[in-house]
Image 1 (cartoon, rainbow, N blue to C red):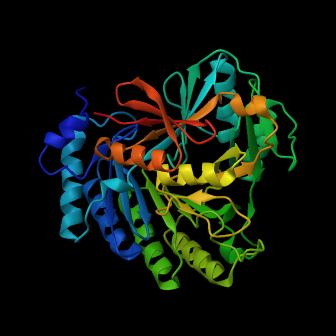
Image 2 (cartoon, one colour):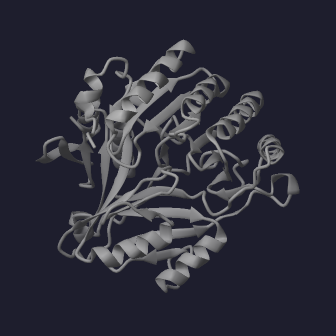
Length: 415
């Protein structure tokens, strides 16, 4: 089948809103509210009622739509992209390609099969091809495994995943490890790459929010039967969120809808759900059940990326500048986050300055950041201004950058 590359999209009339990233084509349309964005969600559902819903992410500031998400965008998807752009313009919504990016993790290993099995178990991901794992809901970063010689030192980059307690217990059994570490939740693959696998909890003991669980963010997933049903749920949830004045992320997939508060956006700072969010969560649950939907607690997961650093402020500023992220305003928190709540959270941990060998060690885990080809230069300039450096261009459309302490990221574009 012919595959449409970025240049094909540029040449096709009416699809200039779209960019090819890691897989498929994406567009972001600004919207003044969740309700306004939900109007586009309904139009997308109508356009795809027979073919299946593309991946649609509804946020307070707009809507991201991704087509051809299981591979390169096919030429047959171009008419759909064009129709979605037309619908957005009819609703007064403008596209903003600056918002588009996709972050993936790359794991260097000499034992791909063993590591792939480990990470598939702990993350609950599914394979795509021979050396890649992806989140079934395509909400969290995927992993790609590259052949490499062994590197024994502990990485400065690590992963946290939060899943339902039963899923965490099953993952521990599958990898045959007892958790370790300061919090008693860490596991390690055969190369020593560490991941904190954290069991979630119920949002509260109240029956009116029993569908919800806390996986650092408060989340619920409802399987659906059709794009129209997914859009109906999203539309009502958008109205509830706008009325409550509380942001929600609503991610629509062909088989279900995930509603997510975002990390720490549900609590009072002391680990208790706020009364406002409890009312909103109860309203969402009531609407879903009135539509005949039943929550699936196994689908949601939260994945974040941690980086150990000696100069936390400098490394944090680099990554925030490169990714276009905001700094968490809490004094005790080092998180940076996507202001549109589309990408994963990054956090930073203090590292001992005397650990010279580990500081020089090249990480086995690094980041691939896919960005629109016409915005790559601005990303490089932002990274350099924040203290980064260019390591080199390893392939056409792939430039390696490093933060002030040598943690690498490949900036990837599709021409």
